[in-house]
Image 1 (cartoon, helix red, strand yellow):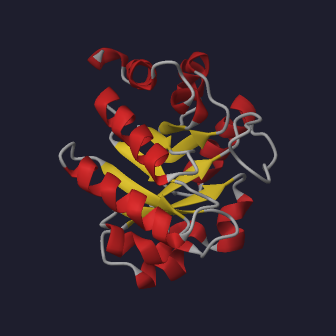
Image 2 (spheres, rainbow, N blue to C red):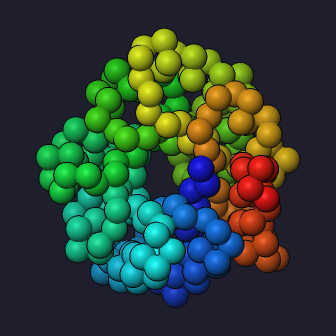
Image 3 (tube, one colour):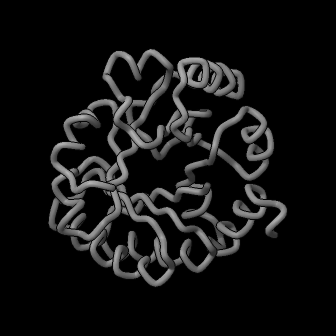
Length: 208
């Protein structure tokens, strides 16, 4: 699974990034515009949701639960300081995807995140696209986290995030994670479409 996280501050830039990764084969986009207004996020997410429909792609919005339905998005991703997933579940239509950020296994019990459909776990390493960075996980951190989740009987997919490069992908997959989330490594590439395709070829080598 490859999830692309937008990192442009503008509506136009966000939509352009989404268009590029869709062309490159990515089928999961998180619309993240931390300092934008609700109106700007709604405009970008609505446009991307319509565009993504022809690709049968998933579009989720970072943080802003109240914009999911009006934007026609598939779901929401909730950070540690956002609404809890169980509360969001009560506000959103059945079948809405809810993701949650975690850094350690204890986050799940502390915040009762069992209602999440997947976990975005990180950071893998230092990244400039994320403010207030949590402790670095590294490969051993993912291995431990996956082990604890499975021993607890939790089967939600775990998506690695935070400073991931193409060279990291094979090693991350060996830890047992289910996918990766990428932002700057694609958006800042000379050719975002080609970069998206390369990440996908590393995640799914038999299909490349």
